Length: 66
Image (tube, rainbow, N blue to C red; front, side, top):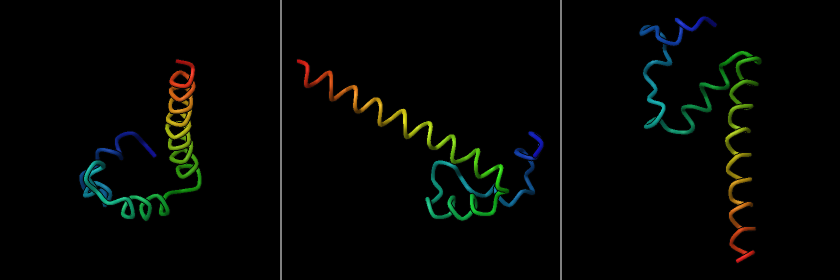
């Protein structure tokens, strides 16, 4: 995928607003991606969810230490 493809207005994905679109809409679109693109999406999601879990765990430790 070329970077310019992301800005193509004829692309069917252009209609989905990444903030307002439903979760199921996004999941369906992810399912249509190539395997490499899916791996990339899931790696990003894993990174953010892992960061959130770590942040919450550290906040709990700091709260318990007080």
